[in-house]
Amino acid sequence: MGSSDKIFGATAISVALFIFVYYSTWTFVMPFLDGDSSLQQYFLPYEYAIYLPAAVLVAGVSVIAAFFIKTTSQSKNKKAK
Image (cartoon, rainbow, N blue to C red; front, side, top):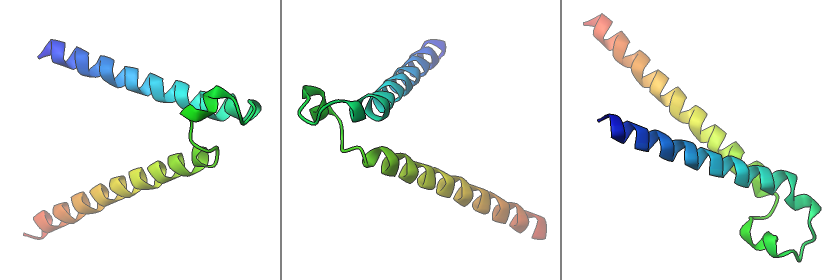
């Protein structure tokens, strides 16, 4: 069980590091390169650098709010019984 936790942790850190490097390169380096640069093919248009994180933030807050509402309503139902 301990080794699977280490593998999961290493995978999660690797994915987070990749996303951080990719997003940082996309937002801080790509605007300064020419449009015909060979690196441009690996990145989405710059507008998505704002839209995607905003959508992920809204989805995450919605999931947290739904969990909070569900948990609160379940505890109220248990107290009422």
